[in-house]
Length: 451
Image 1 (spheres, rainbow, N blue to C red):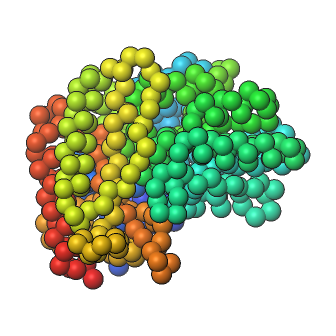
Image 2: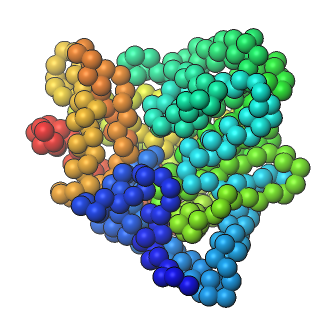
Image 3: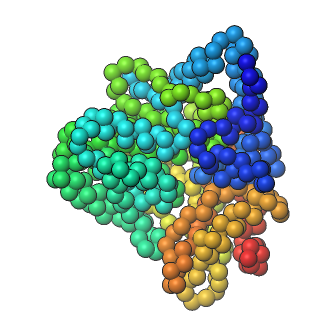
C-alpha cells in the first residue's frame, strides 16, 4: 500500500479549505496547529480548539490501528468499520433512541446540507425556503452553502439581536419566523426552519414551541432542523428535541474541544437503526475519536456536580467581566429548559461569555473596539506574552457611529475544562488561568498594546 499519512497530516485532511495549514505560519484558518500545543490556554471552544496532548495520543493510536488493519483489508472497509463503531459509541454515550439514524459529516455546514438534501428529496419539484437566524450567530458561510445559486433554494435570515447587538425578545423573534413561514407556505414552498441551541453568542432561538406550532399548522410543509453544533446540551435536552421529531446537527469540535471539523446529523424515527457515513475519510474518523473521549467522560458525571461546577465558573467570570470597566459583557437571554427535574440538566447555565472592549472607559458615551481590532487581539493572544490564550474568534456585533463594525471576544468553557475541574479538583486552578487571561486582555486594552 502507498505511504500512510501521519497523524498530524490526517488531523487536517479533508475537503474544507479551512482545514488546510498555512506553510508559512504552521496553523490553519482557526490558528490551530495539527500538533499539540501544551502551553496554550484553550478558551475558544465556541470556534475551535487546539488539540490537547491527550487528544493527539488518542488520534495517534487510532491512526496506527487503521494502518495495521489496512495491511490485511481494503482501506474503504477499514474506514467504514470505524465509522460504524464511532456512530455506535455516539448512540450509546448520548443514549439516543434505537431508531435514531446517524450520518457522519465533515462539518456542521455539511450536516446542514444533508438536512436540506433530505427535505428537498421529499418533493423536488416544489421550492424550498430555509429560515435561519442571522448568519453572524451561526456561520457566515452557512447561507451560501445551503442555498447555492441555481439550486432553487432561498434563504431568509431572522435577526435575534438589534442594531446595538442587544438580544431581541423571544416573542418578536418567533413572530418574525411565523410571518416568513406563512408567506413561504402561501407561495407553495416547503420550509426548513433551522433553530439554534446555542448560537455563537449563547442564544437559543427561535423557541421550540414556535417550531412545533408551525409544523402542526402546516403539516408536511414545515420541517425542523436544530443547529446544536455547539453541543452545549445535556443528554436529556438533546433527546427531548429528538423526541419532538427534529433533525439535529451536532459537532465534536466546539464544546467537546475536539479538532476542527467533525460533525453528525441525527435523524429521529428513521424506521431502522441506521448508521451512515458518506465515504468516511480517515481524518474525520480521527477527529471524531478525539471528541468522543470528553463526551464519554462528561456524560458519566453527575449532573448536579456539573451544574455546581458551571455555576462557579459562570458566576466568577461574569463578576470579573462586570467589575472591569474595560469589559462590556454582551447580554444573552437566560436559557430556559422545560424539564421538570432541574437536576437532570446543567445546560441552562451559560458557557459562552462574549464581551466587547471599551476604548475609553471613563467617557460619557461608550466607544468599543472594532471587529478588526478584536481580531488582532484574538491573534496576538495566541502568540507572545503569557498566558498564551486561545479565545473564540471575534463576533461582529453592530456598528459604531461611523459604520465601522464592532467586535466581541468570546471566553468559553469546554467539556474538558469541566471534566478536569470535577475529576481532578481543578476548579480553582482553571479559574485562576481564566482570570490571568482576562488580566492580559484588560492590560493590553488599557495601554493600546494591540494597536
